[in-house]
Length: 78
Image 1 (cartoon, one colour):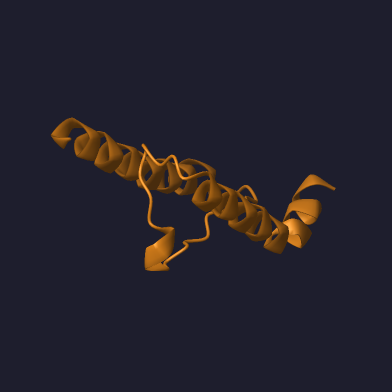
Image 2 (cartoon, one colour):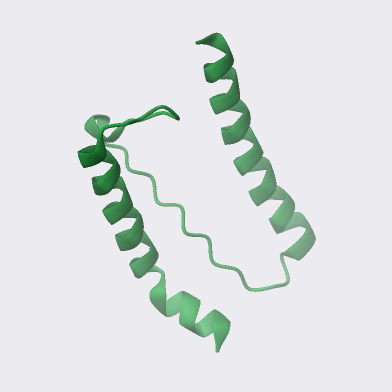
């Protein structure tokens, strides 16, 4: 399980690094980042999550998060 924890941490660091790199290289370009955090403990998961109910709730929350950015995305692509 140590290798799984290392992989998860590496992916999180990579996500943060890519966002910082995007800002440094492309700060003059308009961007929209959809990355709302679901901080409720019952929504905690990892790479091996297999509970279909929880995964479906996360998918729904992701769609809602995307929807909150809809106006910004429309401005970006118009």
